[in-house]
Amino acid sequence: MYSEKEILKNRVESRRKELESKLEKLKANSKSDGNAIAQKIRDDLSDLQGQLKEGWDNLTEDVAGQLNKWLDNTDSRSS
Image (tube, rainbow, N blue to C red; front, side):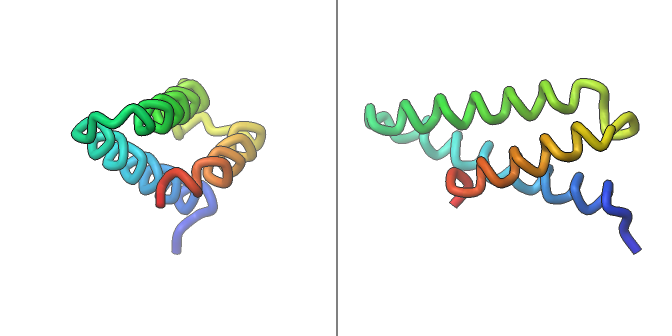
């Protein structure tokens, strides 16, 4: 059985991979309207990196809450 932390980690890693994939597709498409979307995805990934600076082993309730908000906020960009 997975712990809540493991479930959150799996969800975050899955979304990160989705966003990285979308970013690669946008890079291949040189249309200017994709530039703003690509920048937002880069910003989202940067935010994620900042939230995880202490690593998964040191995850606090506050950071877990921030990660859940990050998942909610990036949901529309991963589709």
